[in-house]
Image (cartoon, rainbow, N blue to C red; front, top):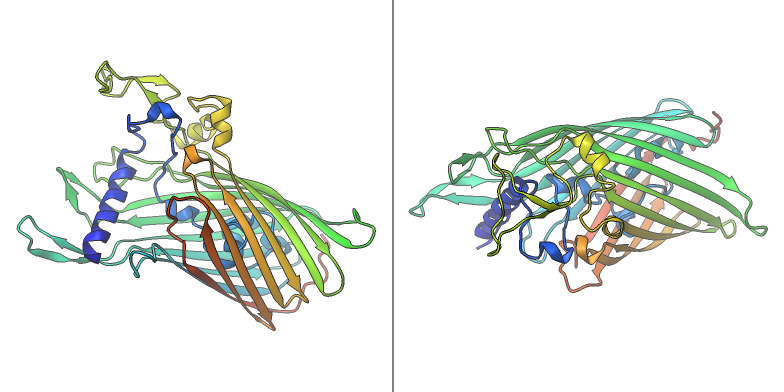
Length: 406
């Protein structure tokens, strides 16, 4: 039963990716529920437990080993000389036990102003038993996806840093499985991230020290990806804009608390509203494309898609604002040893309706750290991470970098 479910999951996932940009399902398209879909959505899953306990946000949180995903520019301000982390996230745990996301990172400070870092993200979809028309076994396959990242982060001043990251993406979902005469292949793509991070100690509160920070990251800027051997149908990567602030209050020598906010927007075209005839069938142009009644053509280049994503929603400005999602986070530390975290993630019901609260814990002792997080859905829609415990191991080496001057 499990193998059949996983096969269905992978096949439907593959089919949706192939069709997402060509035609938006006419059912309910005028209701405003136009969810933006992309290929390789595993790139958008929060991979570590610290951010997972803070509403899946981290563009301006204090730098750590997992900054690659949230904002690699933060590495320029990291205290330690070297470090690495290992994270594990079960996926769809309520249904199966062999779908998971693993995440490995490493960073090395070159000097007081520059840092390099690398990461590997691996998403396993479990085992699938392929069968023929007569039910004969065609073998077992384990679909998987992975991304390999490398970044260089550098301070531009005492308070501002910038980073550029490169990413290789490999997505093999079907092992060359053919459907309706279309042969599939593994998807391969390349992308870059560009990040900015600013932090400064401020004296906004007379009775306590404080630090204010903000960050901006545009991730997954790159080529489209294809899953068919003809290479005709290509889908967008999940190019994403993430930005937001953080405020940390040092309550006394032992206690501090941080508040953070991440705002996200996918920089890919919004599905248009397609014209239909009197019985609801799509109207087709002479070239075989669908006639667009409202909105813009989504079959454009990645760069055009980024620009177009700011003004192409059929519902106008109000729909554009619905495409923003928000991650609110809170983190309390006692003596830099024990942390308690909480957060909330909100996505508009018309754009996916992911809404959930998160909680988390963290411990640090000498070079070792461990983080846990737990997700609690706040809407009826099921979340793949509900009732799932995520964890991260962190190892930091080298003395604290006390001389951070530019």
